[in-house]
Length: 393
Ligand SMILES: *Cc1c(COP(=O)(O)O)cnc(C)c1O
Image 1 (cartoon, protein in one colour):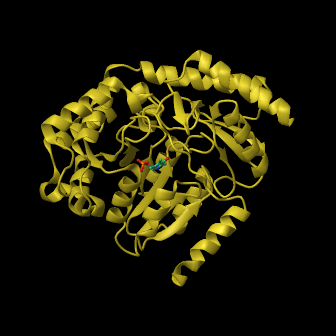
Image 2: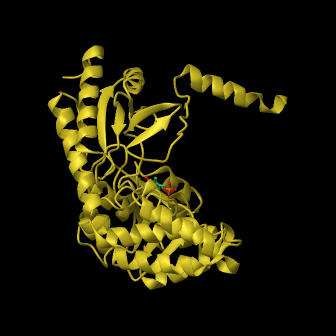
């Protein structure tokens, strides 16, 4: 198969440059502790913020849906794949988000790909996008012919300048992540909304890491900043804090009705499976009822940040439970991660090109599934590995 030789060559290059991704395999449910390749480790890598990934209330609901609705939807939403469960999830999500309506999609990535091209339909349209936006936003933008204005990260001054440059566009859409997952910083949404209102632009926020984390009961970034009714489009994921898999868009009724007619992944890719939808419904119900897992998540995040900072580590400028431990060189971060794993902590290294050169890090993701004891264990282990490698403060 000589045609595929370039693949082997590219894989070699990735390996020689230290960019080859070694994928770990879990032999247990997602949780605060997991089994990886036979070893039980403290898990600081998953996006299972609230511990819902193996929550008995969600598991039970999924099992019930298997019995009542089977395993598969059998069609795209617009032909025969819309089940009563999808509508129930959409209604509950809309109520939870304080929005008029919501649309269930197959994933957060797909929600972005569904939304941006449906709204920006011609070369006369323009998109204004933060330079550090998630890959799925970048790909969604690539699917449009719209003019692209990439503004500096969280820099509303630069955004305003770009809005002036693109002021004659037919439709204008500003897109930003709500929480940026590598640093845990938050988009300055009130200022973005003001700039948008002045320029007649729509705002779309992808709240994948804010959903279940920010705002009252984890209602997300719009709730966090009290911007209800001023952000046209909220994209969310059900794959992170909600613990299952799926995506959604919430906002005005007309937006959801429009996407039901125009969003290509809604029209051309099958609906989410009944057990997944049922588990998502249970997650929304639990979060509507109680904010306890959200409070626990923040307590754990605070304890980890304080503990690591006291041990002399640079935890960056995160405003959320995401806790980066910035170590500098990629090789240092990788070695640190390897030693953590040997000591029973699963926390992966992240380096260029995912983050800028010289800021390679271990990114710690805490969860409500962790106990205070787990957090102490993590801090102690980081301290021990840091001393052994002479990299802490
Ligand atoms: C994780 C993430 C997504 C993708 O969500 P999935 O449901 O896993 O497809 C989209 N946007 C942002 C900002 C994310 O962090």
